[in-house]
Length: 410
Image 1 (tube, rainbow, N blue to C red):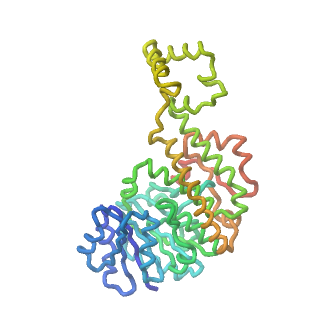
Image 2: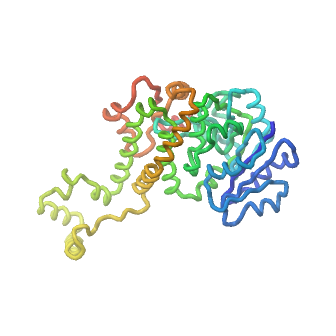
Image 3: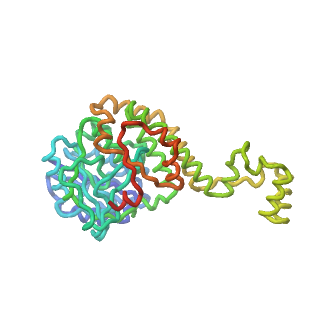
């Protein structure tokens, strides 16, 4: 089988490390290496081509995201197998050969999942993954010493392969629709894994395909806020783009209620926002008698602060002093919600495309890969333990309750 290795780079800070690790495939007729310059301001692809003229370099005029960048490379690829490698990762010896051997040994598999370690090779980055009921994903045992965690066996079934080190048959990539371009970055590999299993194709472990990874060296440039928006939006889109009707009905209420609960918790974490979003008909400050409200303000602000507040309300009106909604956790959730609901037409179109391919119901997929119920955000533990949340969970569907430290360390 001929392989096309696709490396997507937007910044190119560590691109030479990635390309250098692929030097053994230089001039090989059965392996081509494609670098996608994903709209980099520095035009890192041109520099890479000058230093490594054996590469095939494609350039996007704008940042298409990881998902779109891979599509650009895949459309130009000549190989029967696409092998994806992060631009901040370095392939180990026999990297491509290991993937090809794994796929040859497992004709039922559309994709093989390689392993990622820390840059020094001492700790696990990705060995196997798991998915929560609301489609967030974890790298099981991330950060554990490589000697402390057994990697998956050769050919072991996995729910998805990490996009930073995976191989997928080009025919299965095309048939499944590949990555969801609208996700831009994050969870595109989780979504692809779900689609492949639904179409009757497997994802299997390839533990001998190892790459060293500078963890988050590229994604950290996005910043926590933008990454958070992508995490939350993409988890919602992945669930609603992939879940069949029975799975949607079983988990949809819990998924949406959990998203809203986290939004409310983020608001409560900031006192000024907590007052702004408090129930106006409850026991909050605005519902208190006039005299009690002023006594509270005197106690909180002092006499001078209370006078300033009164003056501001006289001049600017009753909304004076309302908090600005800056780039905090609440705004992150609101932007994620806007992105998800703004893209519902595309989400439904992608779900319809999958249903035309589906041969395996989600109940069967989740029986193989039970969804995790793992408190991750502030307030999750109490919410997951509540009677209301319990009433939203479906009966007869497998769920694994795990603490976060258990997920990351086991």
